[in-house]
Length: 415
Image (tube, rainbow, N blue to C red; front, top):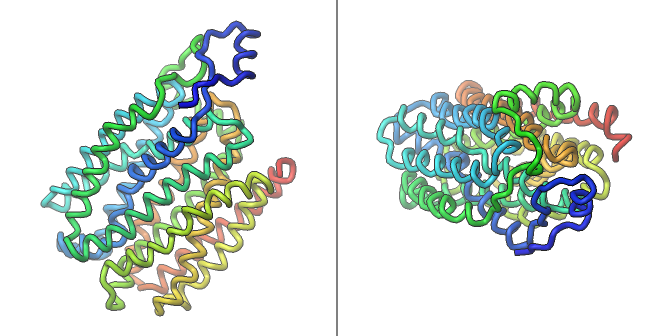
């Protein structure tokens, strides 16, 4: 590990008389391991996407009902982020991650063995509540890297999230088609057991902030987020944009998980379509570096514009599997870029408020995702693929509108 203290941090401590532990930059090995861990802990929420029709058939529930599972998972994640993530500004990030990944392991194991739909949904909901590690790790890393590399490091961790989503969506369909959908969750439980054991050894034990900085009470941390919203109103715009962007992603994939089987394809084909996201593992870091150069507001607006055009192609191209690849690939490319730019607008602010700003951002993201997950299957049950495509277009138009407003209000003085 790279144990050299940052010189500027040491000088600041000498000048101010602080007794904090000298800052240690995140090494390349640590960043890689955190990226892999992010992939595993993120994947749990996405295994159901390609196999949603198989799970519905296994529990004998309708298409509109099965959407409750991912929807409740996302809303519970929003609640978990709100109640747990602010603790990252108070206690050791390592301790918080250790507890929550253990909760994920127990929950996804419950999903694997649940024989009743209500128990399966409950375990999935509890899983969502504990899934805060992917959103705590960027704030953790942002305190341990050079500010000039913030976009690249955020993109690296985002690549891990993308990798987890890719493995979950592509692998789950293939595994479920050959070995049954429960095998997907047996494998996921095994991965979580490994991460639960190894992740505490990857992260260091330093508390957030300096040693002599007074710690706020838990409820003070929670209520302190409201003044932060007033002080940094752009966090609401970024959060709303990510709620819409994530909602587009989830509603479309909920629809695809039902639409492709209705076209006569197996759930493995849903997984193969999801596998096209693999190129994001290479493009996302490059796009993060590009966002560092051009600025987050300009990059986000351009991404939102192209994403809107891609979403508009879903309906006309949605009945041919090969043509459907075009909008799916474009959306998969641009969605993470919007997320990276959103995070860049607030992860460059004071270190001791970043976790709480991330909390506001992620809560809004998963409220949007939870509503859209249920809406995606409900709209498909009512109006088929055209209804699902129109829902996505409406949200994409809102995303583009907000990105233009944010660029005009804040971006021109930053980019």
